[in-house]
Length: 104
Image (cartoon, rainbow, N blue to C red; front, side):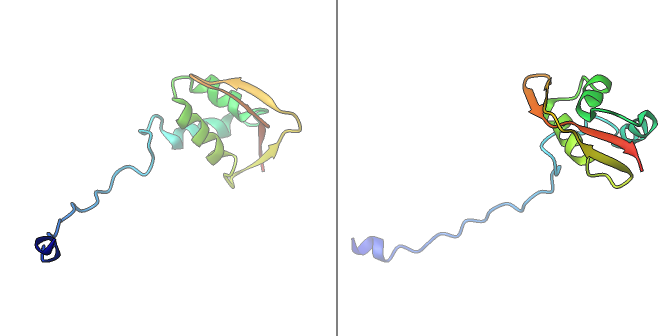
């Protein structure tokens, strides 16, 4: 036991953090172009359906992230619908209250 009491700690150097992508998904789409395309399509009655129809190749995580970001954009008016809707994505089915997007 005396041997362990005099045991000197060994310093372990950890590698520096690397700056990686802030999102767990790769950039699947040109978001500026998507916003322009959405602006040209206004009014849109259901943003999730619009995203699904225009960008069916996007993974679920990218679609959901875009949906939540787009409804908060200040350049248009986003209105929450009164009734829930269910939409099948690539590997999941989501139930939500759809947002209608209109020009300000």
